[in-house]
Length: 481
Image (cartoon, rainbow, N blue to C red; front, side, top):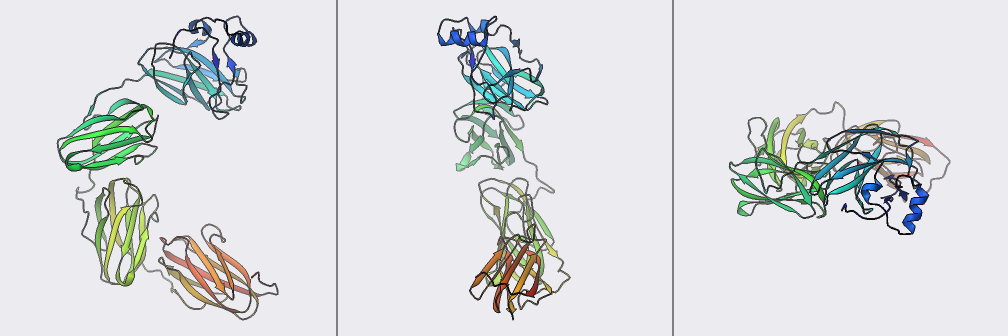
């Protein structure tokens, strides 16, 4: 609140060394020293108005670029050793101003009113002015080592207070704590994408419409921005724009755009998925189920990919077969690659968590069998390596130790994060990444006897080819039991 008053202008620290603002720094009047200003402030005598107090400060004018440089000669923040520069700016009531800091300087901006109140601090400040008057903008280095040239850009943000939004016509508006309700009219049924974006607060978007339709979202657009993408029937909808925690202030952009469909525009949210098949589906909060018919035993790879949601697959089949996967295809995409026996399987496509919605692609492809002999059970032989296939269930092997030996087991895979465990004769040991990367290595002194080696993935959702090797050497070192 920039009101005329009698005081000595003092800028105080605003959040510690990381912010690097002014700690107990006094702006002296023309002809005063800092000590003289501090003394007069302590005696609480009347001081000139803020207009006189900022005489001598360089002026910052809206819509004009200001250039400067923080050097070792700039004013010193006694709190953290950072340097700063101050500028006077005149602002009008009800303006929404944006002040941004750019350039080589690693720094921040602060906006103060004339009552020693810090109004905002950030590399980009957006603030609604409550009262016309003189304000101070401070450019500060982020820490004691931050120097360099900078530019300060400032402008008045043109916002709308409209309570309606139209498809294809984004609106910029201001949120002041309370949620805002905005009307959206959909004339043609179709797929639409609604987004609420803000650099000032964590955006949260809700929509309610005909026949009890309701959706909400927090961060699906990334960077704390909200996105809802869904089929909307013709009718009137109410959008509620707010912050995630109910106390946000600042500028936001709200947009509603048609969401284009890929390929021929066909979506399949149920039905059959066959080898060498690919389909597009739409997830909107409910699990989708597909039927998979495997006629010939073999290895198959099923993938679910999406740029809108975190994909998740569950595959269930004959004889209690069960597999699930979250991110094995990378980039939040799901993949199940496994040997499948002939039979009918049920495939469930959904998100890993949350209530986000969006488009995905589902595909199934036969995969070439590894050109190696696979051994998923049996006895391990020293000096030899075997190949196996992990598909979610631990594989067990026997290890015979004829005399006290130093035993080295290694499990390596390019397909999943390996994990090995050895147990027997009252001894148990395990390892995850001892061979480097996501490969496993155990080296233990073992007494004579029979041991069980368990080979698996660190996560039950992984699958793929692995190599398991065993080396043994006689030792007199007693094992640590």
